[in-house]
Amino acid sequence: MLKRGSKSKAWHGFQNHRLPVLVTCLVLIPLFLILLFFNNSKKTHSSLGFTVQKWNSFDSMQLRPTIEFRNATDVIWQIPDSAKAVIFLAHGCNGRAVNFWDRSPSCPNCVGLPEERLLVLHALVHKFAVLTISSMGRCWTFGEEMLIVKNIIRWWLWRNKLEKLPLVALGASSGGYFVSALATSLRFSSIIIMIAEGIFDQMDVTENYPPTLFVHMPKDLYRQQKISEFIEVLKNKGIDVAEVECLEFPLSPFFLADRIPGLNQTVSAKLFKLFGDKGFIDRKGYMMKDGRATHWKEALHETKEIVLDKNLVQHVQEELNLAFAYHEMTSLQSEQFFKWFESHMK
Ligand SMILES: *[C@@H]1O[C@H](CO)[C@@H](O)[C@H](O)[C@H]1NC(C)=O
Ligand SMILES: *[C@@H]1O[C@H](CO)[C@@H](O)[C@H](O)[C@H]1NC(C)=O
Image (cartoon, rainbow, N blue to C red; front, side):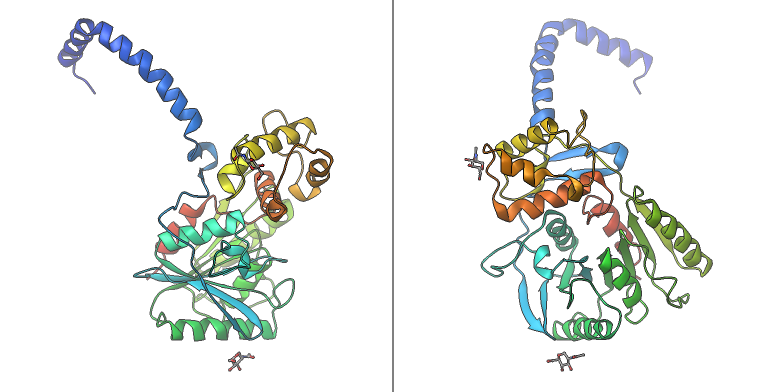
């Protein structure tokens, strides 16, 4: 704070330089406003506790995964220089390991879904080696598949000489149930269970169970109740447990372009307008329904004005589900995720 004396001095200074200050303000204020509107690389939804990261926020980090076929499934990974930890990422039903990685010469069949790829990028930037595996069927199962995946992870750690590093896991939906179970047979330093309550009513959890962060969307009331229940169960066993709530947020004209590689601002703004015209979003830009229940693909088909690469339909769908915040993979709160992992590495 300025002291009284220095305040009046500053005031005199201001009077002497009134014109230049005024001119500077007249130039700077519009400039500031322009920057505010056009530099949307880091839009903060401060009330929601996250920053909307642009898809290319990690320009220096390239996704160059290695792919191997083992035990009849895809194993795809990337190890950053001087890795300090390892993360196993488990997709949800209908997911695949290829969804986490951008299409590239090293992975021609990769899909690079917006949330999945950003999770991987956040992990690599935080110096986590990233391991993704596809489930054998549509969703993860809890019999032999548990053993197979455990063995793949162990073999992979051994082969890459990463056994000594802390191992963490993040699973979404079906992957969340799977990770909750896997944590009883593999030693994770902590885990994240996303949009799932875990199978804590079907297994015996001891005090050795890893610290568990539930990342969930409270709009899904049934899951929210289950999660509150299981948080109490885990707390009562002395396990470190916490939760991150993910709330709905409004779409904006460039949101899809910000999040999806290969979808430009023109297409993004046209889609936003279409959603508004069709009543898929309200006046503030909030989704009226879950993306899956919104007939946006039909509406897109009817209009001849928007050319959306058909490979990007899944990507748009994911972001619409995310904005509605009922059930979707999210990378928006990644800083909180990695804070959780990093604070439980000993
Ligand atoms: C997985 O594959 C490895 C290498 O081919 C094999 O040795 C191992 O027995 C397989 N594990 C299972 C559970 O099938
Ligand atoms: C945006 O993408 C669409 C569809 O791929 C394309 O037709 C259009 O020319 C692009 N616009 C700009 C400004 O790049």
